[in-house]
Amino acid sequence: MMLPRLVFAILTITMQEVAIALIALLALPSAGVSVPVPALVIFMLAWATGCALVYRAGSRALKRKTLTGLWSLEGGTGKVVTRLTPQGKVRIHDELWDALSSDGAIDVGEEVVVVKQEGLKLLVVRKQKPADQKSSA
Image 1 (spheres, rainbow, N blue to C red):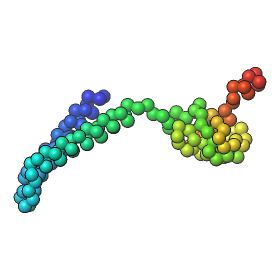
Image 2: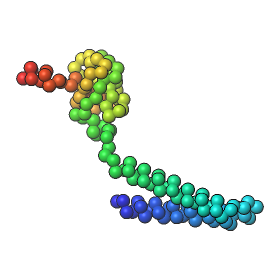
Image 3: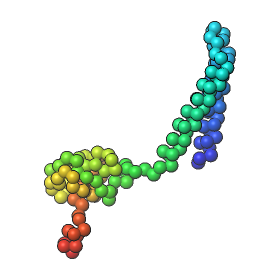
C-alpha cells in the first residue's frame, strides 16, 4: 500500500517541478519577466522539500489507528463535562459528545462508561469503582 502512494507522490512532485521550470524558463520570459536560475533552483528545492514533508505527515496520519468514532465508543470511558440530568455532555478521547445517563443524575468530573450509541447521542452509565464492585458482590 505504501509503494503505490510513494510512486504517485514522486510522479506528482516531478510533474509539479517540470511545470514550475517550464513556466519560469518559457512563459515568464515571453511576458518580459526574467527569473534568475539560482532563484529558480532554490524555489524548486523548497517546493520539493515542502511536498516531501506533507507526504511524510500524511503517511504518518494514515498509519495511525483510529482513536475515536461511533464504531469504537461502546465500552469506552469518559468524564462528565456538564451534569447529566439525565442529558448532558461527556468527553471521550478528547471529543465532546451529547450523552444520556441511564443511571439518573451524574455530576461533573465523574467517570462514565458508554453502553450504547443512539444516533449522535451516547447512552452512558456511571463507572463503578473497584471498592463498589467488591461490596456489591
